[in-house]
Length: 216
Image (cartoon, rainbow, N blue to C red; front, side):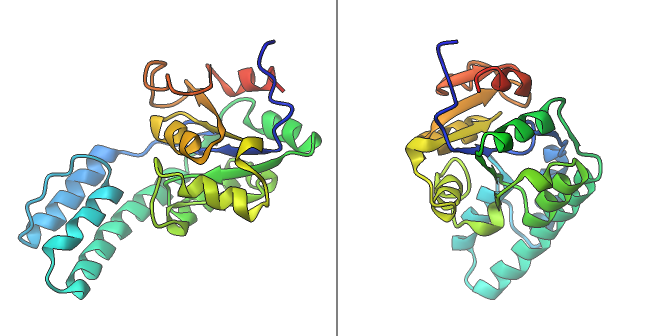
């Protein structure tokens, strides 16, 4: 095996599509958000994620309180949907086995996710992964979400590690970009939303969690 992960001391995982099956209906969320906006006389194209869209809305408001109230309404819809989805979340086969092996080797483990803190905690608890996690960085903990490296950098700094000693694992190009921008070794996993081509910037691409175990 040419690549060995044994030298790394911190492993940061995306959650949805990486360690757990977690199905969010993004089109439903966009539809509901669009209706809330239109009910308030705002016609704004939602091109990317709702998180970025909410930030882009701020300049069109003259009163900050109006902006805060509207975004809170939309954020509540998102969080409620995430919490509902977390009830059905299940760990992928070998997720717990991988985390157990990492712990047995003295590695630190973190979660870096664009989900809310409440939904993340619930998902990790119900899927049986929570006890293995040393730190959880969600969108509630950062100013800029992935693909910005802030998620990763906060986790590294909090655990007093270094970027060169850290592996970032995810199923989305955002995960790979955030890890790369933080200076970490990155692993793209084909268990979620992205194709091999989309994850092409990763240092290593694997088909499953089980395959990661073979590199330890």
